[in-house]
Image (cartoon, rainbow, N blue to C red; front, side, top):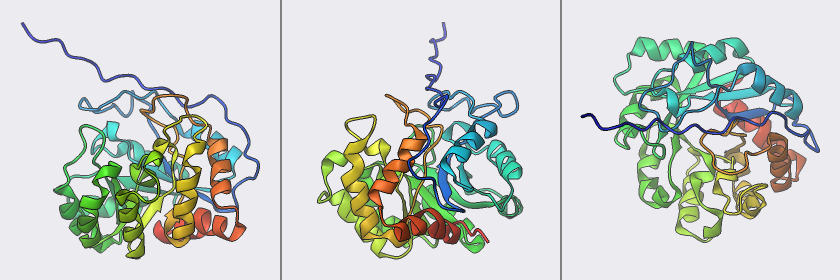
Length: 293
C-alpha cells in the first residue's frame, strides 16, 4: 500500500482592497519585489512546491500600482514555479521594459542562449531561496553568479537571518552585486546590536550589497507590523544609497493578517521621512540596480 501524500497547503489570497497611502510614491518609484502567479491553467505550479498560492494576476497588481503611485515594478520569480520562468517572462512582456524588470530562478546548467533571451526580456538577476523548501542549495550561489556576472545581473538571496554572519564572506566573494531579501529575514526582537545586524551593516559597507527594506516578515507582533519601525529606519539611515523598497505583493505563504500595501508604503515614509531619501530609495537606487533607462 502506498503512503498517503499531503498536498502543499493553500496560502491566503491578496487583499481584495487596500487603502490609499497618506502620500503617494514619487514619479518613477519602483516596487522592487512582487510576484505574479497564474493563471494556473496556463502556468502550472511545480509539484515540489512548499505551498499552493491562489492566482495573483497582472490586473490585480496594476490596481495596487494605481493606488500606490508606483510606475515601475520588479517581478520576482515565485518559488512555487521552480525554474519554470514562463509566468514571470509573460508578466515582463505585458509591462514592458520601461516599466518592469525581472528576477528569475535558474539552474547553473542553463544555456548562454537562454540567459541572453531572459536578459533581452528584462531579467536582471537570479534569486536563490535558502528558506522555502525546494529551493536551490547554497552551493548554487557561486556557480550561478559566475554564469550571470558577464550580463551585469545581480544575485538575490532569501535567507534566514541567523545565517547572515556565516554566509556573509560567501556573499562578498561573489562576482556579482548581491541583493538581500526581506530585510535579511532578521526578527526585529533581536535588536540592532545582534550579530546578524552587524553582518548586514558590514555587507552594506562593501558597496556591492543591496538591501530590500520589505520588513513585515521580521515582525514579532504581526499586523500592522509597527514593531519593525526601529530596525527598518536604522538600516535605511545607515545606508540609504544601498536600499530599495518592495511590497512583496501578494504576500504568499504568510500566516496572520495579510499586509495592506498602502499601509506598507506609509510605513516606509515613516522610516525615511526625508523626501531626498525617499527619492533615493524609491526611484534612484532601483533605476541603478535594475538598469532602468
